[in-house]
Image (cartoon, rainbow, N blue to C red; front, side, top):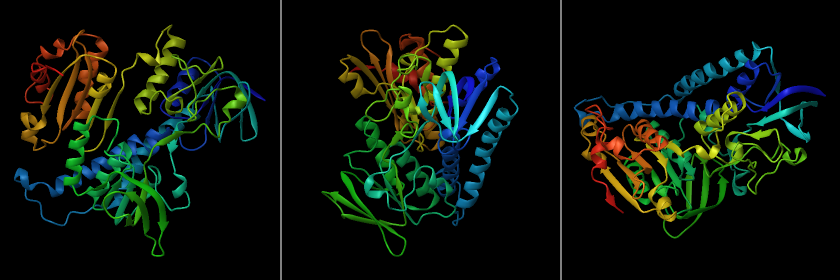
Length: 456
């Protein structure tokens, strides 16, 4: 048995900064990671996919100059191997930095392997028993693999990033955030793309108006969609292609492509952790139950990041770290329920979201006012030749505070932060309505939009 002050399991966006924070405070830390430093964000999520999005955007620019008076000779193509090499270099810079920091810190003992609870506050890794009064779990999540596809040669968000040759025809199962981002980037790279969704619309959690606009401009780029289509079986053909059999009311009941990407959801990596041996409660989906301060059912054991079901984003994982660090070292009283939900969909143009959407607000009984503006009325968008999308903000009629916003369009992923700041400040929407914003920008139309608030 080896004893430590703290055990931290997982090197994601909550675990890694917490390791260094604890070590800097003089704690003897056991740091466990079974795969790569940096977790999903650095290795298989935000960093690599946004590098691919940037390459896909360059390809889009290369073939869409005519509308802006730029004539680019035909023949532009994507070298996926070069795209991957660039991505790998960016990832390596991050992981090497973490690795060096761990090696150089005498307060950190690193264990590469899979952690399992063997008892109360006791962890086994590589047949070594570790114990600490404080344990922080940051084991993340992984792609869900439906039973009917487990024997197939499928791709996930991880393995698709290892391809060095473009798929001839990429079939994507799932029309939510992961599926749409990969669908657009590989269509722009030059692959034929078909996205299959069992529901009646894409990204089911968003309002119909937003999803309708996204569906329209992705179709314009040449992506084919099969909605209301349930995948019942995937078959690998003798020539290496893949056929997906569908239950559907319209269209062909079979689709054949060169590759298949499964993007139907994610599940927490708690099944190998053996949490019940440590007395740690999980819900029916495997997420670790935590309170407002991220503490589990066992005092002194905390769950951070994707595995606690309180957020599925890098920024929520990092905020989990901030909650723990501030409360432990600075006498804070920060809670997970203090944060406002916010996220982006990194298609092009992107979607920036903050707070509730209109449907959620109405379902909760709010009396709301709404302001809308299509991007084709925004001068900066017109000047850039990027007029797809729209902006909308909903306001509580009683308090005059912003309840939520959706910015679908050029710069939407950055613009949403300004609205989010107003929401965190707890001030009325009139603060941003009456502000002066630089011209020419997309953001300058937000005050103008708010002048047109109407009862919804």
